[in-house]
Image (cartoon, rainbow, N blue to C red; front, side, top):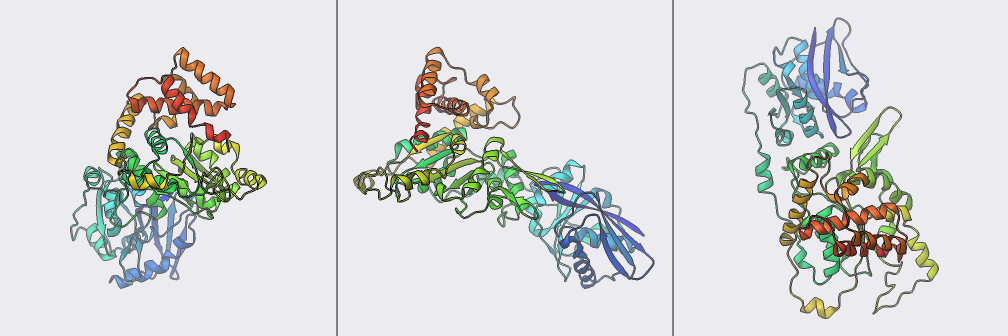
Length: 509
């Protein structure tokens, strides 16, 4: 007999449906899986056999063939266990149901018949809804994640026999419903706040501009000036996530298996801070079974690289493509995958190996050659892709003791949100544009028009500083963000002058 069950899988960060076809034929008992199944999928036969027996059903002593279609796509992971088991029981006549054509199933089986969670359930649920599937059976631990998708009835199953009884119509399950608006309303507050930062008005102003426009930022200064402290507080002033951005971000974490427990939807922007020993595959993504890297886990959030020159040079150079495209392309002999990587890059560095070059209190012990080698670890093309270069000076002890608490993050985030509202209105007709930093050269020309005086100032600055065409466009984007914070329609000379000063440090390094 033949039975067909709809399973789900993930390629990259996108889900797709898999037809699990089970055929029982006469012959010596055997269990074979075809359809480009990798190791974990081929091992499913042992888990499925034990789970069926321990759930109280008789395992058919027949020649069992399981085909995973489409056969041209490689199948990975353990999410095929449950649809395989249901297909075997249906082909053996133990499970009779007319619900298979409109029900998708995913889940890993334990040997005792319990259903274990699998990664990537959110993209699977989105794919199921897109293909017109009405119901989705998922492990209980993944049910809340799948229920974020509206228009799809999600049922949580804890054991194989529970799924069999439900599909046979002998028991009922209540579909899980989750309102994303409630998740956004009750998300946890940040444990840190910009009010903790005393002094550093110039650096905090730069971080507000970066947050408002989604600009990349490089902080340079002697040790102990608060570079890392401010960077870790940057997410507290970033604009609120939209539902579309939240789903995009959660898809990446779900695929990587890093979605926190009891968190069906990420409603705050991610902050990723990899150590400087990270490999290029760990940063960008890849591996034998390609998985998203740190740049994709920072999608719609912040990627913070502390001690930037300490990262391997070839690792930093692979950042160029995602910084420009907002996407990582991983090519393999059998397939090519794309992972989203639209993030804010925030980096911190010291001015020299010892860290005290230019410090008014402690003297630098580095030779000019050491300083040159240290700074040469950062290539010009990479620095050119960082919009804002900010020098963070040391704060005198008297100011630390005497100054009151700084402006709270909530007040800064309110201004940032207002600026982002203006940007969303500006880009209402443009697809996949959320902030000024994402504009192309064509969009900069359309949305950032200068008067004669501002154009002359920019021309003089470009000539004097020797800026590239990329830097020219980035200055215009920053100036437009400053104008948005000020409530102006177009940048004027004041906004442009402030934007230009955030490019000076690149030529002092």
